[in-house]
Amino acid sequence: MRHAPFPIGHAEREAWLRHMTAAVESVDLQPQIREAFLDYFESAALAMMNRADPSAARS
Image 1 (spheres, rainbow, N blue to C red):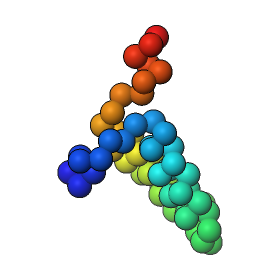
Image 2: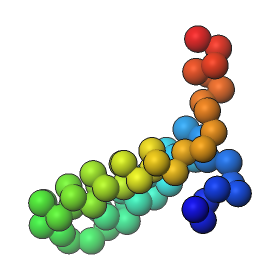
Image 3: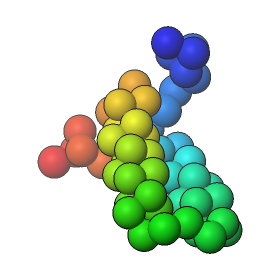
Image 4: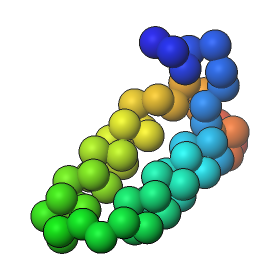
């Protein structure tokens, strides 16, 4: 996995997802295609996480 050497937690996931969402919204896509991209990016962002959220450990 290409991202394994890099710590990816909640903040990194959210930053990546914001950028990918902005990229999708910057082009004129049909609504179904837009939703397919955003759904995929949401699941991909979760799958890339390899570090626990520190606030979750305090609960």
